[in-house]
Image (cartoon, rainbow, N blue to C red; front, side, top):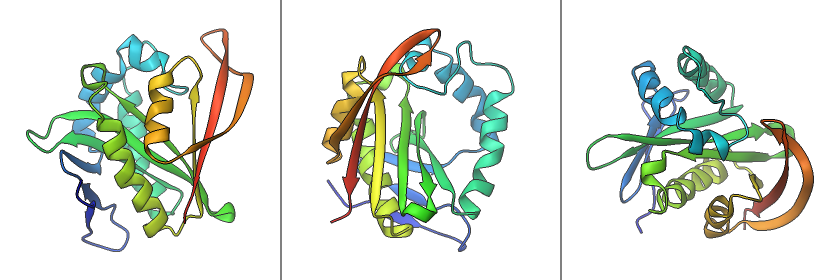
Length: 187
């Protein structure tokens, strides 16, 4: 696999990352309808902490409109995951930065038709490299529902190691969820 490349037009403009099969770019308001459609899939919402179901009108626009400010402040970044072959939006991935601790938490979703094709791992490698190189992070963490082993596989593929299991740690739709916590330290 080739190393991700970055293109940056201005110091405060979120870059575009490129991998073998993907372009990771800032979300645009024009993506909102597709984000709502893809995230509106129960299977996608069921495997994430923060995606609601049904996905409400206006939520994608609100989410997208906040991202450039978040990046400009250095508080995080969210990339639209798109296919290099046709530009189709297939998911999202980002880092929520905790500056005082030199760490960030990775989060992502991929539309169900694109599961099990290693897109999350490919995008994750680019985003992890970006976090370590752009923000000089020391550590990147991630978490997933224990009942979602595919997400755990993505984190292992990124080099993350399990650091803990938080039993009945959160509730999703009125059921308690075990959360597995993973981490990767820059070496």
